Image 1 (cartoon, rainbow, N blue to C red):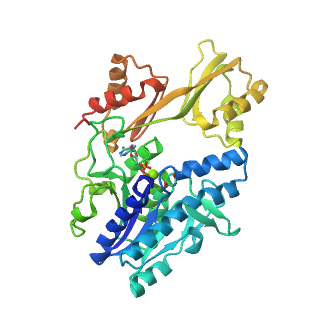
Image 2 (cartoon, protein in one colour):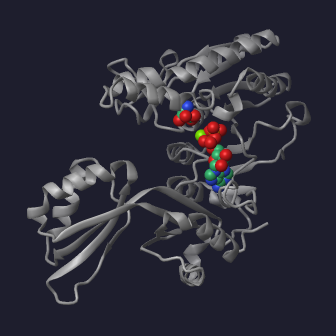
Image 3 (tube, rainbow, N blue to C red):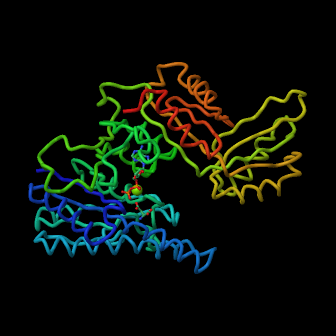
Length: 417
Ligand code: ADP
Ligand code: ASP
Ligand code: MG
C-alpha cells in the first residue's frame, strides 16, 4: 500500500466526461489499496473567465476580492469529482483550502503556502478509507482568515505541499502531456520526453517559461524531497497497471538519481518579457542604483541587464528586461526619474522573447553557449542580450523568431527524437 497525491489540471477536468475519466483513475488507485488525496484545478478556461470578470467589474480591484472570485473555479471541480466518486462507490469528500486549512501569506493573487494541516486527511484514510478531493490553487490567510490564491498554475504547488504534509510516497501530476519534454512539444514536434529531470533543471525550465509545472511547486518539492511524477490524464485508466513501476511519464528527482547526464537537458522560452533601453546614461557610480532602485520600489522585477562600457568615458547605454505586464509601469517610473538618472532617451519593445538553454552538464562543459551564438547567426537570428549562470544561459531575441530559435537549438544540442 502506498500513499499517493494525484493532481489533475484544467484540461483534464474540462467537462463532466473528463471528470468521470479522472474518477476512474482515482478508483484504480483506491482499488489497488492506496490512500489517495486528489488535487484539482478549475475546468479549462474557467480561471481566465473569472479573472476577466474581476477586471471587468473594476480594472483596479481589491486583491482580496479577486481571490474570492478566482478561487471559486476549483471549488466547483472538487465538489463535482467527489459527487462522481461517491456515485462509483468510492468514499470521498471535497475540501477547500480554508477547511483543511492550507495557511498562506497575505500576498493575495500570489500567496505562499506557509503551513498545511494534513492530520485530518490521514485520520480519514485510516478510519474511513476516504479519498480527499482538495481544491487546488487556494488557501487562507493565517490571521485575517481571507481566501488567498497561489498565482496562475498554483494547483501544482497545492499538490506538492499536500504531498509533503501527508508524507505521500509520490505526487503524480496528471496533465495533457505525458511528461516533461526537452522543450514545449507544441512548438517542436521532435521534442523528446525525459525519463527523469533533476529538481534544479526543472526549476530553471519552469522559471524560464516551461509552464508545465509552477516554479514554486518545484522549490517545495526540492525542500521536502517529494517525488514528483508528471504523466498523462488521457491514458485510459483501465490500461494502467497501478502496481507497475514504469508508467510513461517524467520523474522530477534529485540529481544523484540520474545516471546519464546530458550536457543540455532542455530548452525553455518566454514571450512575457519586454526590453527597455536607456540611452546616454552618465557612466559614473550610483547610476545603476538610480535606475533600478525606483523599479524595485515599484515591485518591478528586472531580469537581464546589459551595460556597455562607454567609449568616451562619459555616457553609456543600458538595456534590461522586465515582465511585459510591467512594461508600461516601468516606463512611467523611469520617466519620473529622468532628471535623477540623467539619461538622454528611453526606448523599448514588447516584441521580444527569451530563449533559454538548460542543463546541469554545463557545469563541466565549456563553450556550450558559443555553439548557440554561431547556430543562431547562421539563421540570421539577432541576439539582443545574453545572461548566463552555472546551469543555463538565456538569449533575448525578436519574438517572431522564437519558434525558429527553439528548433535550431533543439537540433544543435542533439535533443531531436
Ligand atoms: P495543466 O492544466 O494540467 O496544469 P498546463 O497547461 O499548465 O497543464 O501545462 C501543460 C502544458 O505545458 C503542455 O500542454 C505543454 O504545451 C506545456 N509545456 C511547456 N513546456 C513543456 C515541456 N518542456 N514539457 C512538457 N510540456 C510543456
Ligand atoms: N486554475 C488555476 C489557473 O488556471 C490554477 C491551476 O490550474 O493550476 O491558473
Ligand atoms: Mg498547470
